[in-house]
Length: 302
Image 1 (cartoon, rainbow, N blue to C red):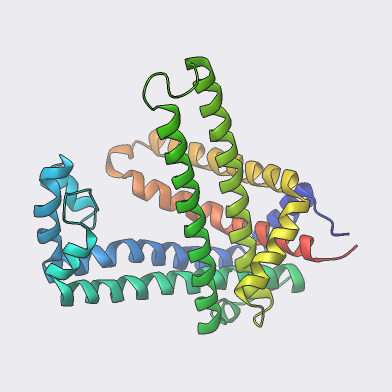
Image 2 (cartoon, one colour; image 1 turned 90 degrees about the vertical axis):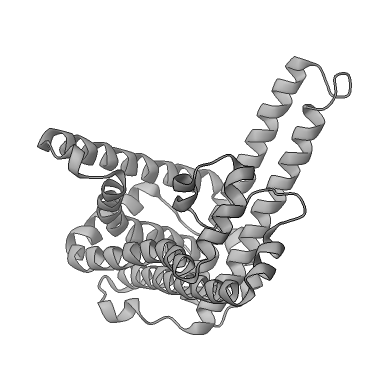
């Protein structure tokens, strides 16, 4: 039977952090920069192609938001009668295709680097050492498999959201159709808990399926999901505890960085985005060996 201990995972991660902190910081900065680039590049391209102005003119009136608010996300999608995303694409087909290709490329780059983090973490766990070269040893086939797993995860989110929406329509329906008010409250709370459990379970499967693709490159998408589901199902409670411990650590680090910014008197010169990036640089080097150790612990046999 596989063995798993949050205590051992934390101890190993701090040890790996101390030993490989330069490498882990460099990798974290690269991945963080890639995520920032993936969010900014499509917006920049849409501005250059003139799509942003087109979309904002369509969206601002119906969405009830200002031009400046819409500029934060030029690809914002709103419910407009007889004119959805298909209408927008048909109005500017060439520009829209170019934007889709750019978006696909920048997110593929981010997934490539994210898988590289997982490979680096597994190498540190297995060999107790690593190099930057390993970080880039991810194939295009592995990236496409990761896309497949991501699509399955997105489908799960849409499915859960649809169920929640139908349930909401039933509970909040016409007076006399649904249960009484106190039963409504109990039903909503119960449904919320079920959805949280399902989504959290899906996140764990998604995450460890990606590790499976990195660990066994020949493994397919379905096999990775099945194997991850089997691993998670046997240690769900411990994995929830492990994620909670990591979340608490991240919250403490964010609090300390915020306090440091306030005490240094530079709060007005540093934005929240900079604080988040600093938190990411501190937490990510711990994150990489932490979850890699957990995955490897679940795959090893006693």
